[in-house]
Image 1 (cartoon, rainbow, N blue to C red):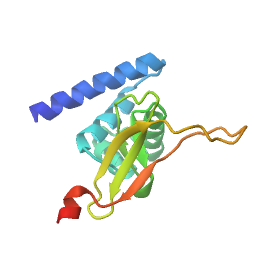
Image 2: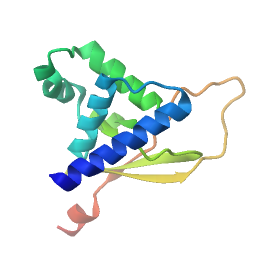
Image 3: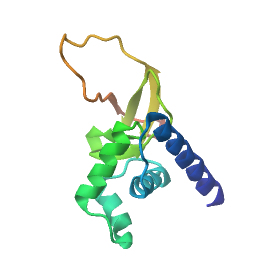
Image 4: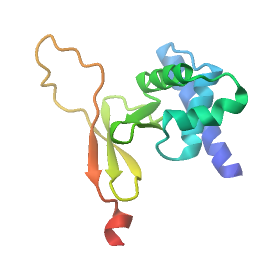
Length: 144
């Protein structure tokens, strides 16, 4: 537990720094939601996060969704569309985009970074978010 806890603390500190660089505030609730995502090691559904926060007594569904919206907008989490779940990301992508590789057999999600795609956006169109998800079988399931 010590090593994982240290890794989580390091990632939370990095998230704090990324937010500070962007002039954003990582409130205690947002930080706790990010911590839960980091500790899970994979995608988590919003209601599972809510259940984990219930002992704190403060979280309601809209509160969780606002925290998740903040984390995704700040680049600290990704929404995995296919699973309707969220996963932590404290890499700071810069000009790169995140690609998610989703195993249709075991549900494992891996993230990789790729150079930004050329801009083919129609004139006047403003992108609010992009999702690049690939579906298939992970190496472990392919070899089984």
